[in-house]
Length: 124
Picture 1 (tube, helix red, strand yellow):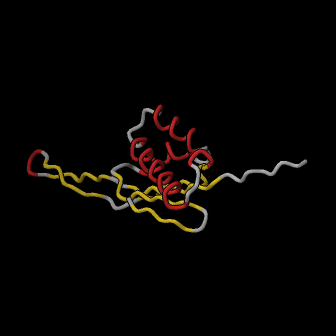
Picture 2 (cartoon, helix red, strand yellow):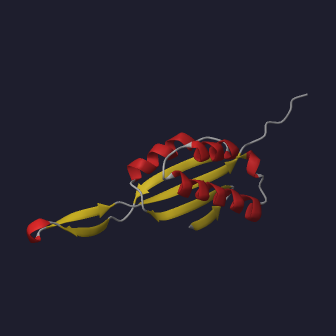
Picture 3 (cartoon, one colour):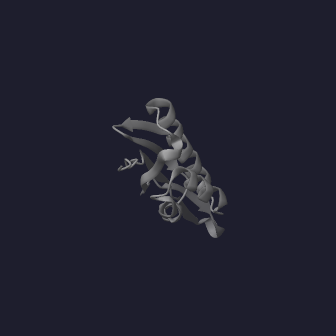
């Protein structure tokens, strides 16, 4: 995992996750715009295999926010979540009569961006 900090947003990036980008987007679309705590609950309860790498990535981004920037994890939310296709791993499976068939294992890159919610001032 590669973690970057730019401005007030905290960015975490996971590369070469052995998962189809289409299957990863199914989970990422559910957590986009949610708060940090709500995101962790959603990811723990969803039955998909990609939830664990995304959970680790969100947790890492929140840890970076609290350690490097001093931000409160409870006040942060997922402002941007993206999935991009990575390199395709290609193998050949031997079949009958000396033939072979290709096996393509897709990978994906997942980017999570956390931002802190703006607190509205009280008008007196």
